Image 1: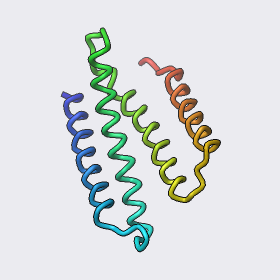
Image 2 (image 1 turned 60 degrees about the horizontal axis):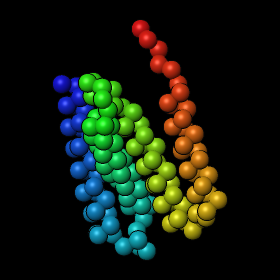
Image 3 (image 1 turned 135 degrees about the horizontal axis):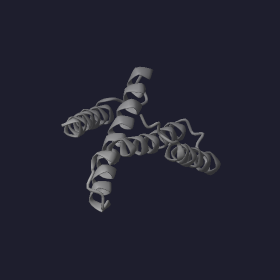
Image 4 (image 1 turned 30 degrees about the vertical axis):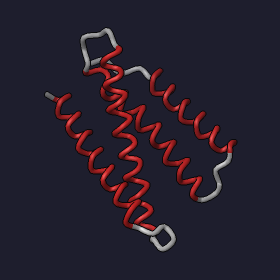
Length: 127
């Protein structure tokens, strides 16, 4: 039941974030918008992208995996999707400020990959 609850919460949050992103894109003029509108856009973009990627990764992992337990794939999928979305949102923000170049983009990808490798190699405590 906990997995079903987590999937429902993730799906609901994703739908709300996608709606907020679409509303931000179509209702606000970026040349006259304030900081709160940009913060709303970037946060909703991050949440929408993280939710979509997390749901996709979870279902891909659960279909490809030969294990019978599907509970072990949820939180790693959420973590990986969050890291990917954080990198994509940071790249979008840097591009909007006109400071994104190829060296900065590659550095952002390397940092994201190293963070994911750190979390994959970190051992969990067994009680």
